Image 1 (spheres, rainbow, N blue to C red):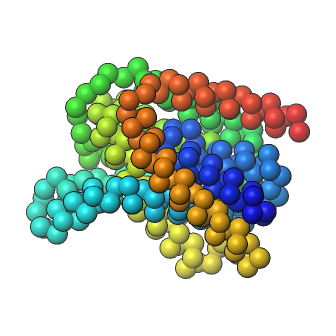
Image 2 (image 1 turned 180 degrees about the vertical axis):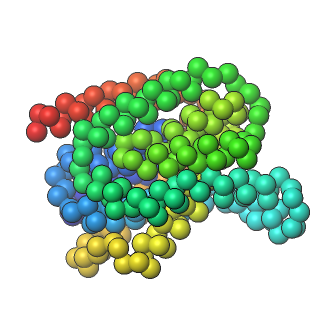
Length: 264
């Protein structure tokens, strides 16, 4: 992978991770446009590295929230902080099950299947449109909601389904406050990413070529820096803007992706 390609894909990941437009889908489109012909395992490694970078940027942006959660949990009381952590743990269950039992099938979908990405982006658009019609509330995420949102996160492991879009939309459709939905969505993925990376490293499933170290490193840095900017800016954008704008964008990109695939 060329250095320029790594920078471009890193920036794409950093910017799209926090918008409900599917970072994985955009990465697959970016690879197709840039002519990346990596085998699925190598392609997945680069994707995991970029997700790791944005997970770190999420931790930096939400450092105060995370510290408060840790302090609250250390009181060993069934307070709001410990309950929030428990909800995060519950939300991880569906994705962990999918990751453990369908990992090989999932990896094969990250090999430039642009038609799939296009259709999944259109589904993301539909979810965002429906969520935009939901009424504003002050309700916080419940334990039952956490599991349902977790199912959405598991489905969003498909390239083209926006993780933040699916989880925020599901949360809002369940009647939760948009601000609380966004906070929960961004924090719930952090332990899952670190768990996934630890599993991949220990199992040796990822295909690593030392010649790609520079590209991986630069892609990581690009995604981290872009993520810091995007996480701060995009969270406010998701809270204040209408999701319909993102729905229109995903629909347009989805249609273009399908047309691009058949044209090539």
